[in-house]
Length: 117
Image (cartoon, rainbow, N blue to C red):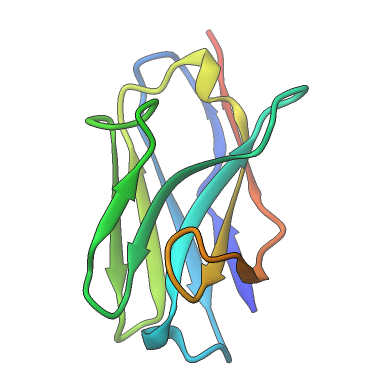
């Protein structure tokens, strides 16, 4: 099970820190990705961290603004989002994959991020 939290309404230029809490999935062997889907937009993988080797991936659209980290002892993954812009508005959800880009084995229901003045 994956449960996201930390979304909300923020002004342009603001910051949010999303959390993904995992349980019952063998956390250490998975890569955890953050996806987002805005209204009328395709789903986008914004970031991923491989819990086996701590390698990370960032989409070009968020590189330099978002940071993904993992706390294996507490089975949590965080997405620190800085410099948020209206185009970052979306439902953000986390997913467990065998490897980054390997296909979702588990996913959460998401947390909504709205960037607006």
